[in-house]
Length: 98
Image 1 (spheres, rainbow, N blue to C red):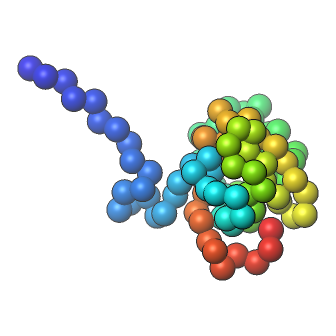
Image 2: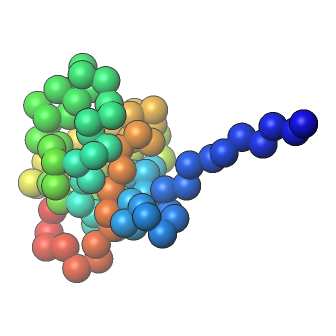
């Protein structure tokens, strides 16, 4: 018997266009997916909220990679790669300025 691990794809038909924040490129805009924040550790979720990052907020990527620097409500915030990779977003090129 061969065990084949199942991988969870966030770009599948049921993902709703959700991708990790780390997959966005510089200049791309997106909206935070509320469900991804629920899965974060309480400390990370509270820290993000204190920095203005909350459910359904709009953002713009200023620097991709680690740290990931985003702009939220005219404020730039740096996120370590381990947190940014757990935050899922829905890209939206038509979003108003973050």
